[in-house]
Amino acid sequence: MTEDSCQPDVRTRILLEATRLFGERGYDGTSIQAVSEAVGIRRPSLLYHFKSKEDLRNAGLEQMIAYWKDAIPAILTAATSGGDRLDRALTAMVAFFVDDPNRARLLAREMLDRPDAMSALFHEHLRPWTGLLTQYIRMGQGAGSIRADLDPEAWTLAMITGAIGAVAVGGVSSHMLLDSPDTERQIRELVRIAKSSLFTPRQEP
Image: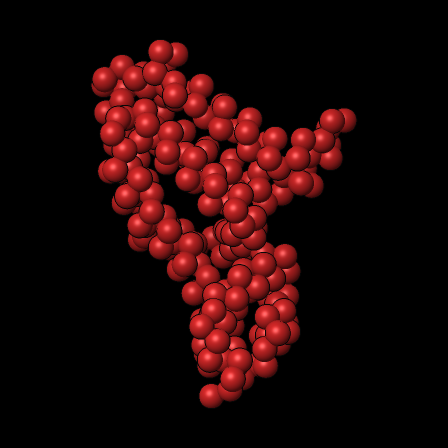
């Protein structure tokens, strides 16, 4: 075992750089050697932690999926009110992509390059938490705090894809406008739209 493979944070560094490179270049355009060089370790050291490029990609995706499976349900169940619950979930979802834009870029690429595989992954791992979210939306509709004409599933999907899109490609697509809004401005507007379309006026946090 090499010295650099013994570093306690090397696995995290590998995943961060792999996520960045897969997001920028795509899976086929990224080599194990490129990831190794980006991390500053030798190729055998990387292969000590991840047996193949596919293993590395899967680990990066699993890390993101784990967040959705664990953090979001915890936020939904810990909040004290319906409005607070959904507001916190929305904030956490947006922050997840803003904190590391490469996550959004990787997801966008993977959904385009491997739609069947990603559909199966979402179906297996993410439906439980999205189902919980739409359940809380319907509860809010019953209590009068959420707009009655809102479609819970369509709203949830629009917010997720909106956040991914704004972070992944917003920096490019913004140049079609005379006044190009940066990612922070786009996300701020997305959150405003999300809240105003979700909560009834008296309930909006």
